[in-house]
Image (cartoon, rainbow, N blue to C red; front, side, top):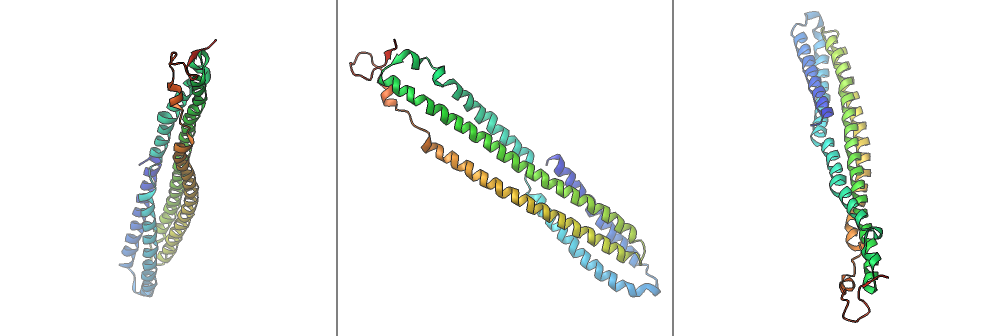
Length: 254
């Protein structure tokens, strides 16, 4: 669990403790209701039942989200591995097989040499295509990681505001008269947290849809490499005899 996720989880636990403190406070107050105020018990009980349902909705929503939001640090790590272990390595190889880097294309001539000359650039281009794909993969995975972290930050703010409202609700529930005010305050805090988290979910889903489209495009590019990457005419290049007398021989250049 990354540090931000740990902070979110800690705030969730703090929020759950505040809710428990509120319910315990109300239960304690109701045990000592004086006879003149007994008529207020039923509305309080009804309000607590509705509040309990709203709190359960909040915890249920949050639990599913925390279980499914993934590991942004791991996504970034995998993205960097794509570049370091695939893209950069193949890019370096492509840099060594350019026509300007090979003595063969300068010191030899003939049809076999021309075949070799025409085969080299597509191989370098194919390797550079994989390097580009690796860079795109890193960008896509990093974007997904950033989206998760942005959502985690939304959750952090949601619980932060909830804790403020919950603390005020606990303070209000010290008396029978103040308990309905506390119920309303905690219910409002729950509603605000649910609304903020729901907005974060919609934003996250929008970003994930964009990233899924990017991933589909990348996978198609990987698939297309098999057909787009030109195979060299190894048969023509293999005819390197200097004595068989045909016109495809490799011959020293002038």
